[in-house]
Image (cartoon, rainbow, N blue to C red):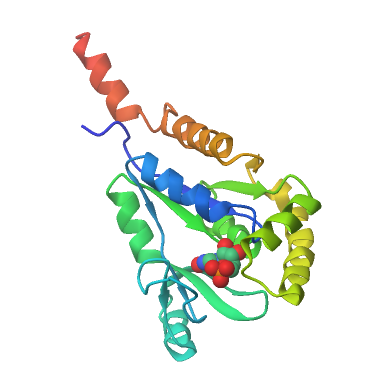
Length: 208
Ligand code: 5GP
């Protein structure tokens, strides 16, 4: 019997450059029974990204078709550029397999998920400070000066919404942040409501 009776939905948001992607990758590598929801997006692949791995890359017509067919749990126009959306069916299928699901969505997307799935657990990842985020964005060398300034401005807007989230992780050190996120996930997995099946099975071993 699996330890849990059913899966939970974990939503993680963070300003660009906060280390959210590394954090999510470590969690997926180090915990079992958790899968990543691969979003659909109209933005083109970047760098080493592969279709179906980081994202399902589609054109706007395909994306709009999916909206018309109500296939999204949530979707957003992120930063006024491209469309991003979480397909509902794969999330439900993973939850039904007793797996937890990790969604990486922006703040607006997280708000929508909280509305339609109030039981979802929302985790916000923050950089330790404006200056540290600036240093990290410069160090990773992916963006132009204009893009860096734009990312910092957007980050300033996004972090104001952290109180909507159930948990806040300040990403000073990746190992510590991984431990914290694991602790959050394991605490949710240990809820007595989620452990009901196994709890009942143990109670039964004591007889009537
Ligand atoms: P990027 O293009 O850098 O991979 O992602 C840009 C932003 O889009 C990030 O904040 C990321 O969390 C967000 N994002 C990725 N997938 C989704 C999604 O399915 N829905 C929403 N609302 N945001 C998403």
